[in-house]
Image (cartoon, rainbow, N blue to C red; front, side):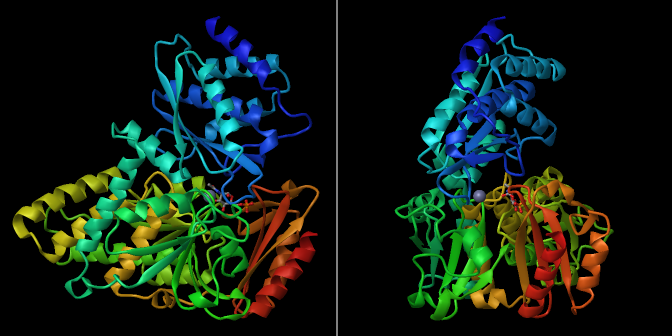
Length: 548
Ligand code: 16G
Ligand code: ZN
């Protein structure tokens, strides 16, 4: 009763906006910030319930990522630091859209009963809150806090302005009994980075000092944090532009650079040939680029597929050093199962390249939660979306084997190639954010691998040549009319449309094309690929006409 009266006091203070239907899409709730107070409050309640249910600390991040500054959004991080379990998404939708206090209370009581969540207040519940730099964040944070504290015994801990991956990292760290401060996050990144730098081949030891990386911070939280963090890094020279003085995500950021294939604001002819990187508004996406000509801000784009390829190459090399000469007879050898995960948007040339490397390549639906889930099935699973969102996951079993092996190697053959390879892999598992894709840790890993290989951004980009591609979006009345299968590569509805798409594809050598309903906007997306840009463009437009 205590619980019910507490909820009844607070619920009426956050009435939902009229005539708006919200849905917990691929990346949580997102909308114009003015519509989100009640949603924040309600998601606060959900997060507190999730904490009660799991007996662990939960995360609540307030951000709209690469969207315009007037938007905002919220997503929940589960105890592992990953995305909220998909089983709870329908409940999120239901409570966000409950029209009045009574129906909301009813939904909460029923759900708590179904999930066997007790409200005795005996069990502590805690939610870590984070927000990006959007001005609407502060008021929305307050609404979320009030939602959390209207659940008996739940406390809200404000981590301040942080990147999305920092918050996910903190949740994961906290539930493993580690310290959660921002300084411990930076410390883990810089010490594992240092370790990898120290393990560069001798002849590369002096590389990198005069070789600058220029980062576009999207005028968001990532640029700010990197500016602060870079002071603690040695062996790497970083210049951060778009640190937050300009308009968030306006003509800047990873999403803009990857979709438009042009240099962001603040980059120009003076930068031709430099190695550049772009983060998105909440720093969970990363792409590289290099300005190629003075005209039209043209760039060579090095996207998520290529970051994935670079990581895969490095890890595969370390694994083969580690396994050299290890016959089956020898005890303790471990054939680590390395796999990569992509979506249908991965450039066909990247998939061919990875397969030629002998790697197992799996395709999933678009959206981090799907890729992450798949990657977790491997000993080492690397996932990336072409748009720059991805990370590397190490299984607990593999990590304990690696730690034990490394210990043995240290005592039997310190300084050997094998010991160094084991040491590098351990450092990668520390550097890369295993909770979620993280542009800051991603930058550091890319930089140290490029130095290890002795590669320029151009040499890296030459790993394979992207097939020309085109993305279009078609505004439709009802995007749910399009239903897909096989990781979104085949449309099963509307009936007959796939046959028509196939007939178009057949007109182009190496043509590939698919349609899918967007998870974030009222549109159907079209992706096409072929051997020339003209052909990719023509294929995309003819398929777009089929959808229209
Ligand atoms: C969300 C997803 C992103 C995906 C994009 C696709 C997360 C954290 N973000 O931003 O991974 O690429 O949606 O958008 O999962 P679309 O469905 O509109 O094409
Ligand atoms: Zn983002």
